[in-house]
Length: 360
Image (cartoon, rainbow, N blue to C red):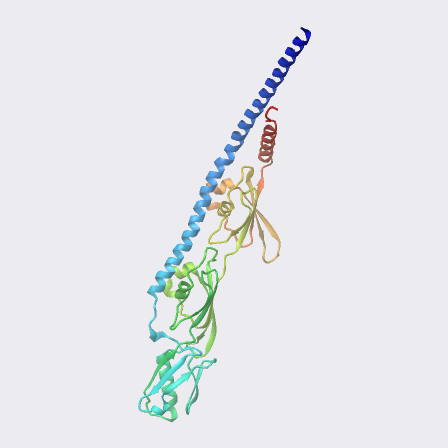
């Protein structure tokens, strides 16, 4: 009897211990569930709002580039130039005819310096001139000593000089050959338009003829793309010889600290602190919204200046937001109390899950 009672008491004790373990595990599981749902709520709420802002910024950037390229194509179609404005350049082949003087009528190759060598008068500069201007110039040369009121006609029989190079943030950077004079807008359209990382400016370097002196000279222009689209008549220049178009990529600002995706953000258009933070994925739950700093280097002294910004203030009043420059660093500090709270619940959650073990 004592042996049977002992076995019975042992079973009861085992069941009691098992029930206690199940109760403890259930409590820990319930705590873990509460922890997960409780600590997940604040970040999810903020992430949804940030994701919407980030989505809007991305759509706005893509819309800007798409709209710019659409305008480029439209203006390129409208700005087609007639052959009368063609300006001769090196390596072009010209046919010059003299009415009634067949022995002087022949073809001439423009040399690398923009000249042709003609009988009797020698070297004649033709680069950068239209066909009408070449006819007048050649007639003037021969009328001085050899012909009386010569009738001269000129035409291009082989186009070789009209090449331009386009590099930088365009869809198809390379050297292009054309058979007529080309405008800046047409060149950008031929290159497939600008890309997402394009900056706001386009640089043009070419050789044109000075209208006063008649001499070839190097021209360098800096054209804002938005102004080119807004006022094509004034800014849409005709490319000269050896044209090089460079569309630099935009600069970068850096976002670090309590954001979801720290790193570089492309500097496109008017990038402000709010936009940079949105493109960096938005603020983390533990971010200190009252402590955002813009670190900017003084170009003249080389010193780094710290500009304090309250995120909540500029969010409520975007007119007080700060426009960023290339190389700026946006630093978002961490709220110590929030960071401790997040760390506590993260550790508590891990402990709760470790406490859950099946019975063996």
